[in-house]
Length: 144
Image (cartoon, rainbow, N blue to C red):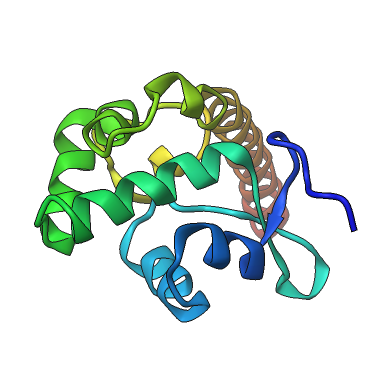
């Protein structure tokens, strides 16, 4: 079988081999670092993009070579963003441009891009307006 190109997606097994860490460590890191979000296919199969691997390599270096704790890496991301974290881990920060640079991390809101957030906010406003119209109709029916 031919080797995958540098832009090809990697399975968790391939990512694990490339980083030299067990697969359960990659899954554990996903639970500790909100910015590690591989794509998931139906059935939960993880696919790591080249950007994901750059992030994982940075986390690995920060934890295993530079002596950061998990909380230290979380703080680095929260205070300085993903690009700074990746640069601190020795990777090219432009490698994560496609992932966005959610700095500081405010939880789930930072996990989505600005366009997705704006679309959700518009949908919420439309739902709230529809609820207000329904409430007005119900109040009108109750008064009859």
